[in-house]
Length: 136
Image (tube, rainbow, N blue to C red; front, side):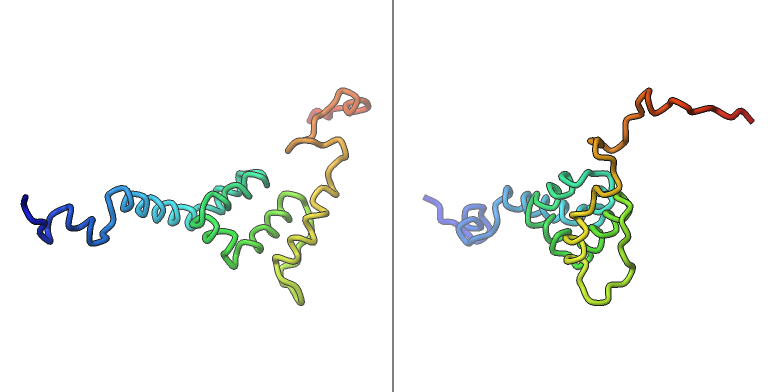
């Protein structure tokens, strides 16, 4: 039976070096992390709130790049401002963006009609009564 030398594959595994599958997982995780860090917020700009939450909870890498980032709650406040027409001050005198986001989250639907169930309101025929078009 031949002895295992330091350069043989069996010796490398026995010594604790990573397997090809482990290296591939590490490379995939690092690549995903760089993508999320670079483009995560741009991607979430096109997502609804539940999809934003889902992206942040995919794995530890995405959580580190989003939820655990100091910028995350500021981005959430700015998104809440843009999507829901809420006033969010530019500078915060005594609270954090996290606290402000959770306070304003309760008001996110205040400017939407009660029957609103989607991203755009449905125009009904009754809404068009009395409407006249002006031709220029």
